[in-house]
Length: 417
Ligand SMILES: Cc1cc2nc3c(=O)[nH]c(=O)nc-3n(C[C@H](O)[C@H](O)[C@H](O)COP(=O)(O)OP(=O)(O)OC[C@H]3O[C@@H](n4cnc5c(N)ncnc54)[C@H](O)[C@@H]3O)c2cc1C
Image 1: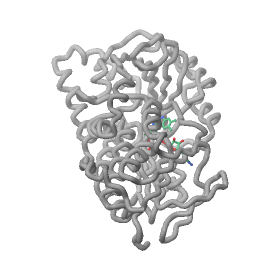
Image 2: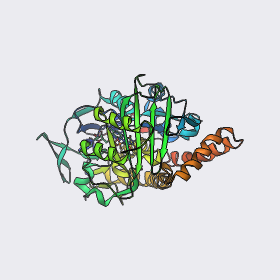
Image 3: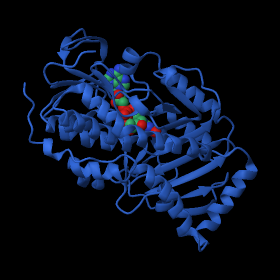
Image 4: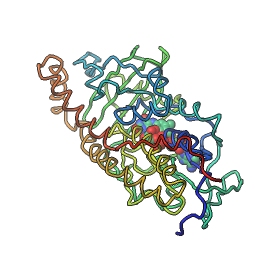
C-alpha cells in the first residue's frame, strides 16, 4: 500500500451507536468531513446500562457532553438478591454493584448514543437505513457502493459497526476467525415494571443462570429492563439478525424456572428493543488494512463481562481521531499510532473480561448459597469497604489503562483540501 499523496479528509463511518458518532464528533472538530452510515432506519434505542469510568469520563468532559451524561445518569440506589419466592436475601449499595469510583457514572447505552447523535447531527451527514455493500480501494481513496445503489468516494472508511462488524467481514474476512466465545449469552429488553422498582436492581441466581430486573432514574415508572445471562460452553446456532430464533433460545434456556421468570421471559414477545448476543471477545492482529480501519467493538469487543466496552469505544474514537489529526491526515502513520496507544489497554480489559465472565453465573446450588451468604453478610462486615475497594481497584486500573494524550492543539487545525 503506498502512502497517500494528499492528506485524508473525507471519512465514511459505518455504525451510529457509540464509537461511530463519537469519532464523527472528534473528526469534525479537527477539520475532517465525516459521514456516518447506519443500517437501522433510525437511531437504535435499547441495550443495558453501561459504566463510564476513569478515562471515559475524561473523554466525555473533553467532548463537552459530561453534563448531559450526568443528567441522564441511571442514578441507581442499589440492588438486592431474592430467592425463588421473591424474599430478599441481601441488599448491596450501588457502589459495590458498580465498582465505580467517585466521579464515575452509569448511563443507558441508548441514551449515550442519543446524546452523541444529537451533538453531531447538525455538523455530520447521517445516512440511516443503508449499509456498505462494496469497498474498492485504490491509491487515492475508496469507492464505496451502498446497498441503496449509491456510489461515493471517500478518503478513509471506518468500521464502527460493532461485534458483528460488516466492515470487518468485507475487509478482513469471516468473523469466526476473530471471535472468542466466553461461554455465556446475555439478553436484555424493555418490559412492564412487574416488580415496581425505582432506581433499583433485583437479582435471582440459578445454577448457570442469572436474572436481573432493573429500573433506572430515567425510566418511566411503568417500565423496567429484564436481563438474562446463561452459560453455554459452546456457541448456539442462530443468525444474529434472527430475533425470533433468539427469543426461542432464551425461552428454552429458562424453561421451567422459578420466581417471576416465566412472566419476565413472556415479556420478550412485545419488546421492540430485544437484544441477545454471546458474551465474546474480538481479537485481531491488526485493526487496519490500507484505508480502512476498525474502532470500538468492531476492532476489539471486550464483552459485557468487562463492563468496559462502551468506555473503550469512546476511547478508541478519541485516539483514532486525535492521531489522524496529529498526522495531518496521513492515515498509515495515524493508524499505526492509534493501535500502539490502544492495544495494551484493550488487552488488559479483555483479560479482565476473561476473569469476570466466570463470576457472571454460578454452577451449583451450593455455590449460590455461599454467594448469598456473602451478599447477606457483606454489608455488615467491617471489611466491606476493603472488599469494595479491591473490586474497584482492579476495574479502575483497566478503566485508566489507555493513556489519553492531549490532541487539543489540533482543534483549530484545518486540513488542506
Ligand atoms: C441496540 C444495541 C443494544 C446493545 N445492548 C447491549 C447490552 O445489553 N449489553 C452489552 O454488553 N452490549 C450491548 N450493546 C453493545 C454495546 O453498545 C457496545 O459494546 C459498546 O457500546 C461499543 O459500541 P460500538 O459503537 O463499538 O458498537 P455497537 O454499540 O455494537 O454499535 C454498532 C452499530 O453499528 C450498526 N451496524 C451494524 N451493522 C451495520 C452495517 N452493516 N452498516 C451500518 N451500520 C451497522 C448497529 O446497528 C449499531 O448501531 C448493544 C448494542 C446495540 C446496538
